[in-house]
Length: 373
Image (cartoon, rainbow, N blue to C red; front, side, top):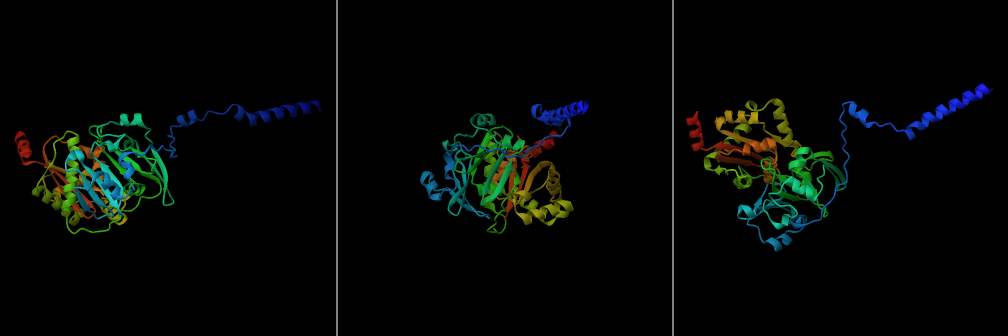
């Protein structure tokens, strides 16, 4: 009996000890996970901070008369094929400003100027300057029309296109030039515009489709000239020579556009053609179609444009051309195509929701290159 009681006592001690050991001596699992070689990825959206609304951010969602009362009438008003009207301020590049107007309200402001209205930001500042002012977050979770959305920024997004939230429930995207690392422009926008443009990864929710409201017949010369101005403005900020636009370069761009439309099989694989068609049907940021560099070179060859002297981009659909250009200059792959020190011509073919950009060496540069060869 004594042996049985002794055994029972030892058994109870071992049993209780086994259950209580994890409580008093928890196992450190982190080193084990690290040793397994697997990367632990978390998509938990941490609460982001909203900074105090100031400057241009205060006008997002407000009636246009409030903005006009402060800044006067725009120098130009342009109709677009989308659901907004484009207002342009600033005849000089240093004062350049764009507004997207929807239902007589300001939905988006693209500030290229160095105005006090961009404070606490200013063009020319670096990411480190912004980091001293606020925390740069990678996740933004919010609701829009009772739907939940969760946005995640990748590393390059945080370095060149960080997102900032204001306490009036609006946002700003800070576009840093990939060549200089300096702030080139600030885009202020409401939730609808952000979810329509959606330059980031959506972990929850779907991007809002591009609402095409009007089909402009033929190539849009007004939009083409606007794109050229914005590209040259960003080139000036970087200290690079601006592009020259002439009738010939515009015709070449339109020729390339027509060649791509009418001769897809010589340029695109069946899979890529299908992807392009899918983008036409979806008309959303998540299905944007762009030509690869190899495909663009095939296009140049097919259109009989000297590919040794030219490069460029094609993208469809385009919701906001200036936003697209800002995205290009903040992207390492696209920026390199604009970073040439040589003088070049530019042509832009803008048709409905499609944009083709052609960059060509000038005749003088071509002759000098041929002589050196």
